Length: 311
Picture 1 (cartoon, rainbow, N blue to C red):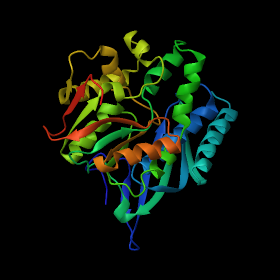
Picture 2 (tube, rainbow, N blue to C red):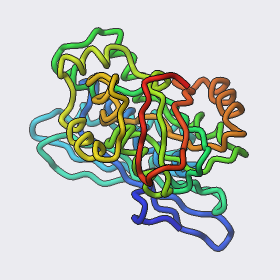
Picture 3 (cartoon, rainbow, N blue to C red):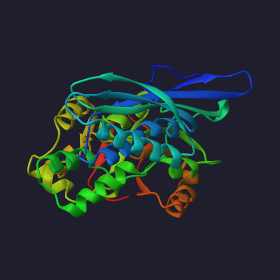
């Protein structure tokens, strides 16, 4: 059903019983010093791809790269414990996996999920008039870069870890029965990169209202100080030809919207008639954000217009 043609979050394979198997793999290098929180965030990041297809995880396998000659195995144990913690919150077990010796730790999951075949949601079905929602604030790439440089407060460090370790399960469950036309999660390509993929696959355009886009604390100040990952610049080089910025939008915001995320939120294109109900459900579910950030518009395909004004 879904392969590589639209840069979607996972593969989907139709079964004979009307169900579809959803499968994905994702693993990352350490983003925080605490090995448990690294494992937890990496697992949440991997699980998110199943939620971003409208699926329910069934089970997972570990994928591990680890420098056993340089780093104590107890560290690996904490990483794996963090992964198990996230998986069990998702209601599944990690049933095996594979590891190799490497010079740098890397960890993630291969996740297998399931959904009714007619309920699989891709990133390529957005329709003109749809409202766009985001379920987590942006800025984890900038903040984890600042964390490594000792440029961030302890309070903000705790907040970005909380965002990355949080599953997208409650946000995904809030979509049941609503007319969700396209769905993805925000990870390494940043908000604009993943929205651009959605617009390209859907052959539509989008308008964003900048004040409605949620950001973590200190993100703009750090971006102004040029504290951000190289991935933000690479993402911007890729998206810039397709983005129309209001002239008054500052450089820091342009960086933040291209910031690569770890375990970011869901980006949802929902029928305008269901937008208020989705906002209510997300708030009731306690998602980290329930932000209506823009809409799908009739315009040049794969174009994003960003306005400085509010919705």
